[in-house]
Length: 126
Image (cartoon, rainbow, N blue to C red; front, side, top):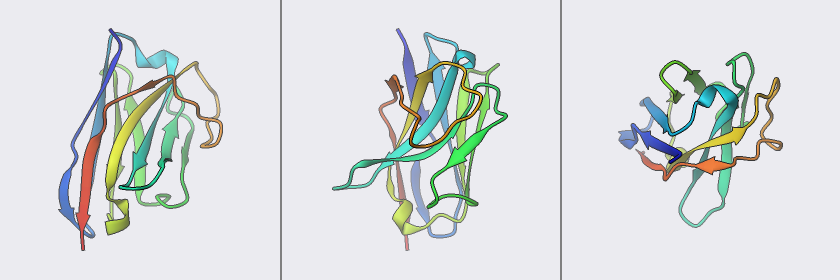
């Protein structure tokens, strides 16, 4: 059974950092483009970041560029999202996602996940 399980969320203060992890099971992420989305209360799910299969190419939403870093460890079958300088507007449920295929280049608008995790809550207090 294919699963994506997020962890690392929590309650932090503005300016703090967090690292989210996404552990995959039932499949090997080396054949997938991976990414993160987030959904704030009352809002739609938004793209955050994506990374190609070899980690040679990444793409970020403008709202997180320069603060968040996506990475992956194919040997550990895990994807990460390092979040620095957190702001209250970063408060959301963060979802890990996987798209079948080894893209060379990823972009937010073209990243179309086939699989989703259940999410982890990140709350940033002011």
